[in-house]
Length: 604
Ligand code: GLC
Image 1 (cartoon, rainbow, N blue to C red):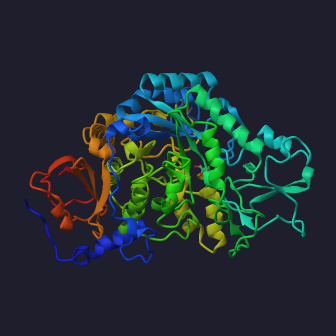
Image 2: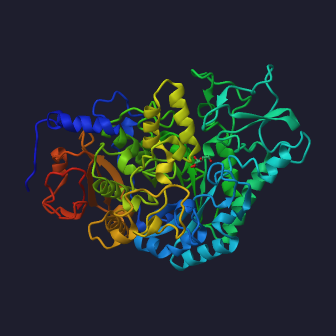
Image 3: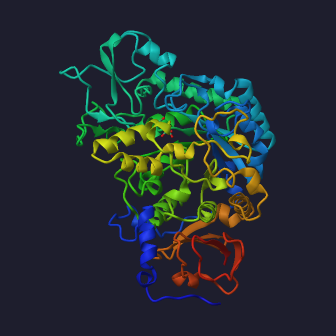
């Protein structure tokens, strides 16, 4: 076995590799300390595949219906469009589709502002369309997972309309109302997540209501039992219709701290609401109640969007005494700190990504399970987010596919990820629909940055990067609609990055995803095996071993644009080791140097 060795890691990592990493945000010299280092290399527990419920063996595919497929030549996609693509998703190996919200909504935040939880928003279709989607999906053994937005509603929801009409109506206490401060201003200094005060005044009550996100998204008062009961009714309505699971939006914010105290003000005079309200003690009592009164005892699963829950807290949230089957925990998605401010995002180094992923693994090893995700509708494309600037995005997409489908947990793919979609860079802020892009742009200008710098951070982090129309073929508007217009521009790379072209190309990103999905589906070690990170100090390569009943699989991925020697990894490779998958496709020697962005899966 030939193994490329070098003297020290630092000696090997060339200056150009270092600067490429730094440009991408992944800096070899970052000062930031990982939060969970001690657990990072502990092995997780293996269990038998037969013991796994369906959702632990499935790949979940997140579809953003507004951008997935129009069935009727419209600017936006619809439910029938998703139904028309079920065969494509089946071929990809998908076992469940998470649909972002399709309920009646004025679309201030693209459906995350629900005006009526019991009906479908007309541009998305009808209840019959939803019934048909569920039935057609079931025929293909695919479940539909619905997105429940219950921290807040739309301000056009009948509940809020009634609540805001007076102080003494039946729903007067369904939202969080407070009297003005002595000077008539907002009751406290919290800044909403999308910018500006988290409070909006309503004359009819001479009071302010609280909104964690936009003013059009008033927060429900979960301390009110009637609210909690109605939320459970909403879940049960959709459970009884046949939903296979629920993603619970922004769930860490549902409980507010007693007295709603001011936070530490930043330079704009506001304190971030996230710091004040995320994961407030007592929240889990409400969530246990929700689980017990909805999906307990069924085979539905519930995954929470748990921004603000640390990996070390996962055991309270998932597993035997937890409330969720999985939670989206974001430490690996926010290594650059962009969650707080896009313009202030900083560089990071590969070891921090390893630490974050390993901490999630370690904290769900003996108890619980995790989703494995690198993209969603709120995040930039992973080929830009995790790899050096200027990387070959197809190679980066395959590298990440290997890491994602090799890890322990349920992979959540986001539409377009399987085609290697990259970010967009539109010429002005006026092109952007996403409200947070406008807020972050304005915040950057307010901090004294130029328009060019402000736009650059929007290019890098805008949520619209993930929301451009799906690219199905080379026809007009990439086959997303037969109409002339699309609600967001189609990415200009659609001639190469589309489902039809990639289906026919043996070495495409799509076919690589299909192969990795098939490998995972047929490999008990990848489905149920334990996880142990190896070669932790390797600055270019993330590597881990999965193990079940004494059998092992090694996954290694070079995150740089330089060749990476195996170094300590070579000691993992027995003489009998064989390659199960290689992202370059040409199956080199099992122990050969990893080429730029190359990922390899080996049976040991
Ligand atoms: C979640 C959603 C995001 C939405 C926000 C408010 O973070 O993923 O898209 O804007 O909640 O509902």
